[in-house]
Image (cartoon, rainbow, N blue to C red; front, top):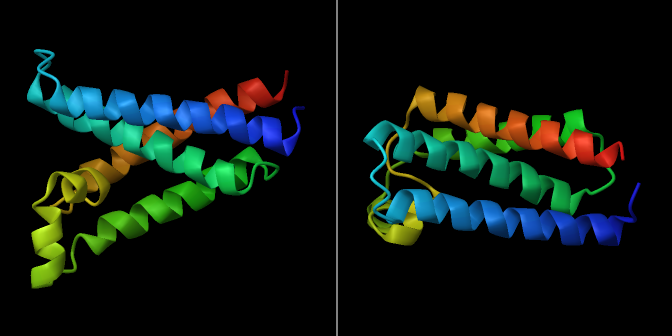
Length: 129
């Protein structure tokens, strides 16, 4: 098993790749169907959340990391039900759309769970080596 510092570097690289892929899927005219663009971005967002949680606690068990990531993703999605003028103004910006989203959706929760599950599976596989 790599040291926590080495693991953090790998996680940081993976997070940056996931962010680039998510922005690319959402913003580049790739000719993908709208549903693929929306949910691929959400799956990647879930994977990013897992990576960020693992970055903070690199030695924690994969299942625990996934549970915390899913809890955070659910909280962020539920936060979309909160509306203030300032928050809604931020949500209309590109940064607000990418970070917080605009509209609550149960389907986003499913996509986040898929992304977290995929990231956890990849993480577990790389940690066994």
